[in-house]
Length: 321
Image: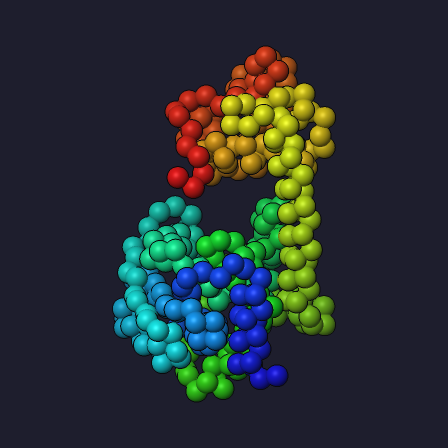
């Protein structure tokens, strides 16, 4: 199978697993992954009679970025998408340049998409890098589970396609992808993982590291989703947004109990929830000695009283509002 055919099949297979939207958007950077995805999305759109639109984010982080963005939009249209637009963003905020750029990018894509599903060009190699990052940071199984193929409004059809396949697809299509200099800049963590860590692991472990990491992510994702389903049932039994019955929570294993607490806190409006926050709230359930409450981001306080956990402070907002 040619590389173009493999990418097209991945997109077709993905669309066969989701409810088809009225429009398909594809995020395009001008790199090989996104251009190969754009062509496959356009092909699938024609087959299914769904309009396709390319969204190109100009982060403004490099000289000439506006020209690069315009050229990426033009290439996407040459590859068959019906329309393309450039979204100019301002990269600022906490977490370093990589995190700030990601936040700005996703915000712009979300605002521009309307009701469309947005396809992203993350590949098997990106998934492997994500798992390694989570492992190195001790982020837990949810992070090691990597990126979901379908996480509305985002779709990632290429998680089983390698970066080399997208490069070959572009060569078959006769398009020259843009080489983002940031991808080779050792100041950025992902760039060093890509250029130094993964090649070393491939050498030491005699190959196959990226697919193995991607398989690990898929296995952990299945486990995490199963545990989350059980946790949702426990959350319903324990109460809900008005508070949680401590006795119900205390009877559950830690892995389930903390999932219940995590869902409750996020649904109640707590943002930037850390593992330390979660463990402190969990201590109100299993190591309570009459201690005071736990202050959480958003000036919310989790407290225990009369056998229940409650949140006090500013009026919580429901996730998604």
